[in-house]
Image (cartoon, rainbow, N blue to C red; front, side):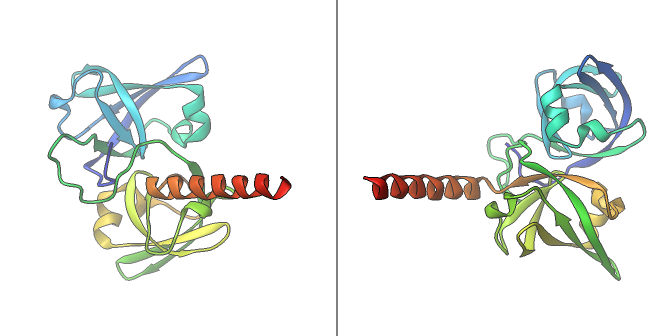
Length: 206
């Protein structure tokens, strides 16, 4: 589990295709000396497992399904990514509970800069906004943010100067793709509502 509080920005040093998968090498991953093989790390919000640690670099493997459902397949050598280490027992929950499982990929529809602040409008896959509500939480490229407005096919978030400076979001522009993870509680609420609707439909036919 994660909280959506980015610990550092790492650099993509190498990407090696492996059939339909890739092997990803990252450098400058904060306290890399304390990372071990098997650890879980969120990369732009996507939870991956460390498969090798070598001379300041961390290596990961991303399969075809991960590449299809996230933006990790868009990465190139020299790109930067948001990094968050997984929670340890007793860690503070400063953001919101984030699983590292991406629900969809959104596209920046509009960016408005006001002095040191920015507002993003992000267009999302059909139906995903059913798991969103104004003032609720969402993870965007692994960053815990508060939803401002929610429409049928897009939502807005306001980014403070610290977020723009300390994460990759500050460099994002219109047309860029972003990993999105909705709030886990919203998923359960939606599922319960769907089940209730299915039960009522069955009863009406009896």
